[in-house]
Image (cartoon, rainbow, N blue to C red; front, side):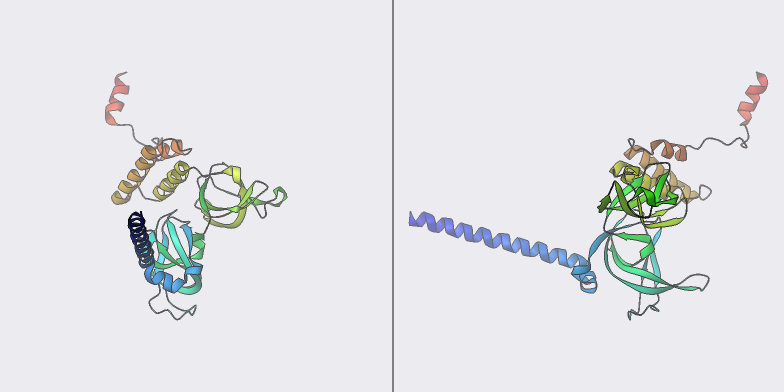
Length: 270
């Protein structure tokens, strides 16, 4: 009997040791994944977030002193709706092609592909959840009260980040960039019923918003545009935006286009 108990105890000790080592390896691996980003940002300040604009920039600061005059360099574009990890916020300077320098509020981020850098605060949202505007006229409010309705609206298909914890009287706070109005909508409220949180609607709109600015007269951009719209139709056929995506992919011929010669000949014969 004692022998059986001893063997059982030994097995239990081995199992606990293996489990502890496995947990330690997982923890070490997760820490290594974020590496210097955690060291720099401080683990207490890390939050998940989202990109709010098509082509939002990721920037680097080669010589960081912490001063607002530290110069940023453009690294790459990020995608609308991308998940990002956000860290410390600060100010930094970017000089555009016209040699005009502007000081921006920026936040340290790590992209979903593992690239580290800084993003403009106007182009990202920290925390929250993704949604998309589905109403034709979604009014904006200063507070979660009907009487505080503003004179402006947010366009249908606009991808937003909303904050569930702010839900009050059926209104939620949002952060967004309205591509039709070309305006930031930060800190405003909308009726929650004006939004859809369905992944099919959110992802379909992201693909549509990414495709629309691409120029059909540039071959490479047209190919990308066609691929994005095709993916939106095939992958999200139940999206509320399906008809709009279909129309973008198959635009009706304008009245100014010439009638094909073969059709002109047939009409003459008739």
